[in-house]
Image (cartoon, rainbow, N blue to C red; front, side, top):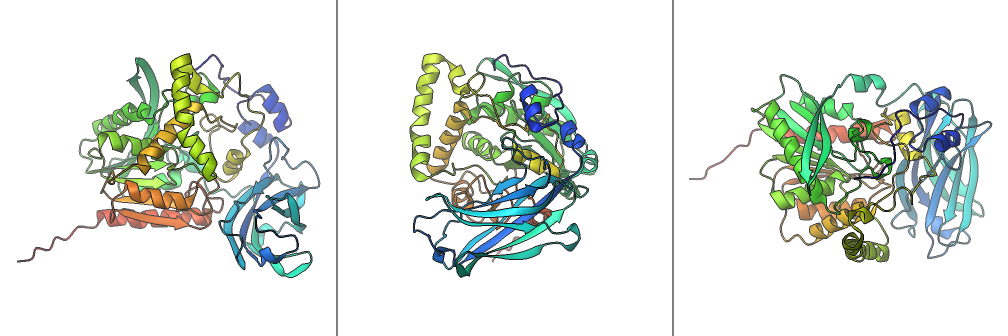
Length: 500
């Protein structure tokens, strides 16, 4: 059903990322990372720019793009096709004020001993002009964040303010031992969709004392590597059930799918494709413990539209509350491109599906798509949060036509809602530092999904797309603290006052 591209059992181990990529396009293996010594991490907190709009050459159309690069004295582990040592900050929403606020954090990685300095550049993306280019010393790991003030040439009153911190290889927010300390069992699922059998699985962690449950719905090309979140949920009496829906997560590792380029592809072009798997997972949850007094649904990123689409068609009767982590409710694209994506692509896709069959929705994939870059972002995350590359791809995944159409249809559904889909307790996490989606759109659109008074919103400044997997572990802890307070609120007794 998904092509004939084999999924190798193990990648080869080249001496550079390119050799490994050419020998096996699937991922930079853990073996390659381990063989190349120790990987230190530089955290960069870009706080703000002061009087940036007054620097020479600034134009009203300016789009200030800030990039951080590791400057190596030897091979740093980063190349053009594997830019582990390069990161870019999201362009601020309003760059034309006296204080241009970024308040974003990024992380770059490099082989220990390969670099002593890093480079900060600010480029006007609109006019392709370089406005700042400076090199700085990498701080020692012992001193925490170091604040830096970078003046612009020819404009002494204009500067960038940032903080940097070196995190050694030995320090990780989630280690392999942490993952082993929250073990998951697996239960396979089979669901009929359109006359075909879809294979997926639930990975779950239960404890005898727990009397509540969480159904965890993954994002696109995602995997559960969140023992810190799982332990918090378990602390409040929740068993954790992770739905690895077909074409995603552990389904790739267990070889339930045959085409590695179709991770998270939606074969039918509609999120309804996942409804049967959600129902099957809920059936399995209740079969484990019939006394669960509460079942919550947790949805991250693409898990958001999957869950929203399910609620639209089936209601919220089987669930008692919701946790949304940066739900993908809108394409974060320029307005014109977004309108084309949401209004023009779906009818074209439906025509192609009728004319050429459902296989047309798999484009671009093999043989038209062959990733020539590793997913450096996923590998950077692994340097701080241990992952399994056989479950979460370390290579770039094509955004297929089927996925785009399914997402656009659900986005249109949300925009057209005349009343909320649920009035049950819901918490929404989002961050202005999200480099994937617009936090502003998430805040606005989540109001259409959840009734007023039922929604608790936490909008952060510097957390990442997954607020619980932020480059600075302290930001992840802040989000965990807010989740803990919300869970406490669910367990507080409701006092009913009767007036006579």
